[in-house]
Structures are given as C-alpha cells and as structure tokens.
Amino acid sequence: MKKPLLLLAIAASAVIMLCGCASEKESRADFFSMNTFMSVSAYGENGDTAVKQAQSRVTELDRLWSVTAPDSELSRLNSGESFPVSPETAELAAFCAEFSERTDGAFDPTIYPVLTAWGFTREENRVPPESEIKELLTRVGIENVLQNGNEITLENGATLDFGAVAKGYAGDESARIMRENGVSSALINLGGSITTVGKKPDGSDWLIGVKNPLSEGNAGTLALSELSAVTSGAYERYFTAEDGTVYGHIIDPATGCPADNDLLSVTIVSENATLCDALSTALFVMGSEKAQDFFRENGSVMGFDIILITKSGEIAVSEGISDRFTLTDKSFSLVIL
Ligand code: AMP
Ligand code: MG
Figure 1 (cartoon, helix red, strand yellow):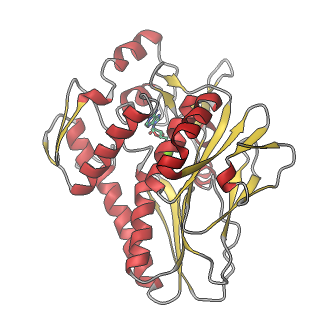
Figure 2 (cartoon, rainbow, N blue to C red):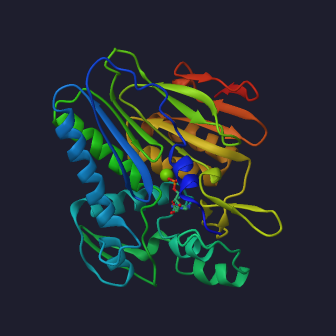
C-alpha cells in the first residue's frame, strides 16, 4: 500500500508545537531528513548559525545511518563489511546493545529484515507467512552485533537499523549545538521527537501537544523546558490488511509481528532525547502492564517519565510530570502513576 506524503506529514507531527509566539527574532529551518519532516527554531543571537549547524548535523547523521543509501555506514555494515565506524555510530550501536539487553529484547536494532518482510521499509505492505517470519527471526538478535571499540561486525546475516533511536540522538545533538552557540531558547521538532532548550523567549515553558492516537487532535498538552518528549504508536505508520486487521510499524521481536497490545501510544519525557526515543519504542512493544513495571523499576534510575494512552481510553501519566501534563480531550480518563 502506498502512503501519500500527507500521511507522513501528519505522522511527523505526532507531537505538535502549540505556541511559537515570541517577541525575539526566530531563526528557523524546515527540512526533510531521516524520512520525516523536521523543524528547528532558535531565538536570540546566533540563532541563524545554530539552526544551520543543527540542520547540517542532522543531515550528516542521516547520511551515516540511512539503511537505504548504499554508501551509509549502516548499509556497508549490513552488506557484510567490517570496519572502524565513526565515533557516533559506535556510540549509538553500544547504546542500542545495552538498551536491548535492558529491555529483554523488546528493543532490537536488528529487527530490520522482519520489518522489511512486512513491507514497511518499501511501503509495499503485506502479511508475510509464518514460516518466513520464523526464518527471518533466526537472523535477528543483538548477539549478532559484535563490537570492539569502533570496529563493528555483523554476524549471521544480521542488519543494524537505528530507526527507533536516530531522531532522538539527532535531537540531543541539535540541543548541544544550540548551547554551544550560546542559544538559550530553542525548540527542536524532528518528526515529532521534541527537544526543548531553555524556555520560550517570554520565559514560559514550551507547550507541546500529545497527539490523540484515535483522531487528528491532541489528547493533552505538555509544558516542557530543558526536556525532550518522544512518542511511539502504531498509528504513526500502519497498513490495513484485506481482512481489516491493522498492522503497525513497531515489531515485537518475540513474535516477529507488529506489537499488538492494549497500548495506543507511549510518550517518554526525559532530559535525554536518545533515551526517550529508545524507551518509547521499547515500552510500546511491552504493553501497558510491563511498561509500568519497567517504569517503576527504572524510571528514577534512568531519569524518565511516561504517558501511556491505552485502547480502553485511559491516559496514565507518571507523577513526575503530572503537573506538566494537561488533559485536553476529556473523552480520556486521567490516571496518575
Ligand atoms: P519509533 O517511531 O521511534 O518508535 O521507531 C519505530 C521504528 O523503529 C520502526 O519504523 C522500525 O524502523 C524500527 N523498529 C520497529 N520495531 C522495533 C523494535 N522492536 N526495536 C527497535 N526498532 C524497531
Ligand atoms: Mg523510538
């Protein structure tokens, strides 16, 4: 099934900025990278320079990590080459390996062949036969990624894909560039992965929308400063099979099938956008109960908060951000964790 660009644009704004009003001059870049629409806004002196640098950094990361561009570092690894990768590739690969273990494989950066079998990478969706999924799963697993410093080797025909974390990493990098340029007020929206630097020029928090996964509007708003928020949900990219079943783009590595549980979306809030991105994908795979267990065990150690929207119409918000969250769609019921 081919998806019009408009749908991608809607998915990209899974979290929508609600307020851009400001008295100071806005420097802004809108661009397409990492297969999604992005916008970076900075206020005050050096804004123009910072925004340009952030855009070129994101584009550079996309060139390193695109799994469709044949000469990217990940494509070269995926085609069986073994070589010393760039420091950022090594850093993110090591993060992914550790995170995959920590989430008992719910997060798995080697899931790509299965994703391809479901047609998500080519936008030619299909339901693969069970035998094909089983066969592909033999190549999946973080144990197939051997890393020694910057040297990475993929064994057993495995492939590496940073699709679930790259935008988060790019958000952290963009925020670093803002601060290095002395920008103290910026909003970075990389396809719905939001990173905020400081506050709005008027001194208030950045207000962003948490999308209602069932309709066009927002379910609530989040007031953020110096924090990132990343949402994962099947509604962001999916297809409907002939029998009416809806299949989303986040795969449960335990089954090789799109994650199908009681969750509609997971939003993670943390100072670390890479962590937000990885966690939103992993907790979406886990389902509500396991996600809450994982949060109780790791939330304060790892430093993150959660918003879970369930199919039963509940929005569960962890206490740490309950004063930042406002429920705007009253058809949902709010629960504080
Ligand atoms: P996100 O939108 O950050 O949740 O990332 C979803 C993307 O990550 C998908 O489009 C796939 O490219 C990839 N992906 C799907 N399932 C997983 C998984 N279980 N672990 C890691 N990456 C995944
Ligand atoms: Mg993610």
